[in-house]
Image (cartoon, rainbow, N blue to C red; front, side, top):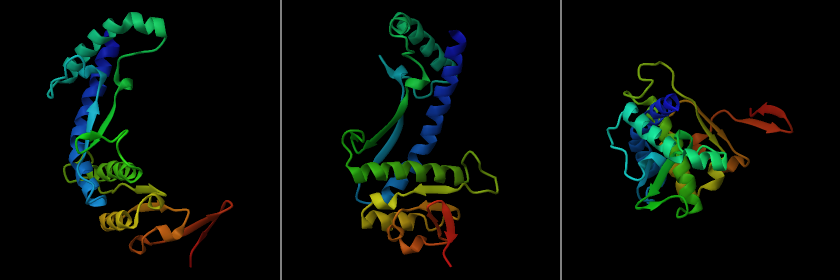
Length: 199
């Protein structure tokens, strides 16, 4: 059990650090895609924050000790239910729009904008000068799978403007007209398994 807690502590610490680095990029990306949509905040929600929150500067060892306590505490319930009730697999992203949680309160368009902000924020973090891959020559490929069909015209335009500087973007669309003209590059059509390039 101690080894499980030690490794779980490392995972939670790494995730907290990653989300801490990602959060400002998500906020910025949401503001670009949904300029009138308010503030989008992302955090890390861990079951170890109860009954009292983990210290913001808690290291992997301290988190591992908290996890070990929790594992010992819930052990009888785990045996009874046949599931593991504590650990990193029970954690999740905490996404909020303003002061309300996105889950249950965000509209369809706001939910899509949050999802896009996460994708764009991750891309921005990876391409930042101080990002985890700083110094690499390659740029990640940004893949957007049929997102424009879910956005109104204002958000489509805002997203197109946001992607202007990205050099490797793959966009899929069931309806070609959904993709703004500013993002039209090489077009490949897939029809009944056959791929053809527009001339």
